[in-house]
Length: 302
Image (cartoon, rainbow, N blue to C red; front, side, top):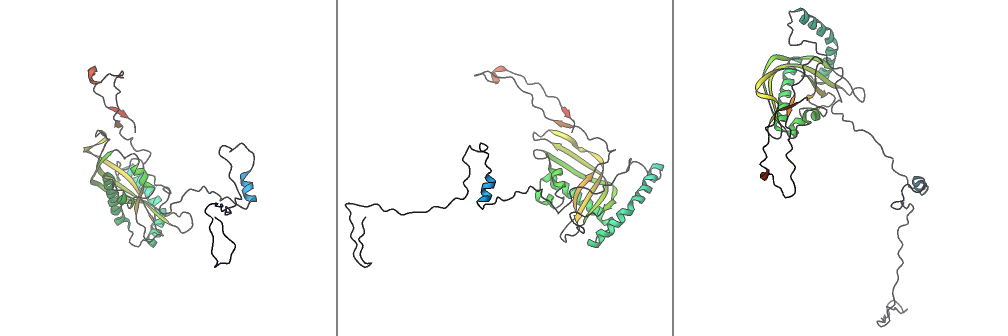
């Protein structure tokens, strides 16, 4: 391709027989910092970060921080210590009278916390709250048996949710609340602050003595723990929490206090696979006429 040097409106003659290549210079992006080649890492003692800084490139600093969830606290502040022999000693006996006087002494700090809670929640009363806490407990466990995760998040805190759902993926849970042996009552209350002063959280401990049934089945449909027909008396100390500063906060199940004198849990029965005989190449299992022994129930401590 040849172009004659004529005015702009002149004719252009094209030489088709002897074409001339046309070269257009193209400038690529100038690289101030060239990364090291593959496989050369650690071989040279050159400081690549210093080279990049000299070229005007600054690496972004990496921050290793743990995320903080301000919707709930990370634990139970000043947990309630249940008296030994609770729900067994009568209030008329010597031991029951001693427990009652000790509870009155410890209720001074709870009264101050209840006053702070009432400043943010005007409808809070200890009598109505205990019944409300029992309803939250029953509804949360019903959602757990039905695997309703969306509703369960609105009934339990972010700390309590993994504790309730851990290890229940391939299990079937059958739980029922039968009746209350004693009316639930508030035994402990605290109003701590977290991160900054004035960021208040309300934690109320409710004592609940009820009759329940629990049965857990594994993925094979075999019973692992409990029974659906045999009810048991259960004494529980539930911790209900709310972010008081948040106007849209609600009371949710935060944890459970297990006393040191509580009886040990029943052992869990697990299904164990018995290995069969090793087959040779070209051999089938039916041809061996192998009789599988009846497996026995094996108990494992939880």
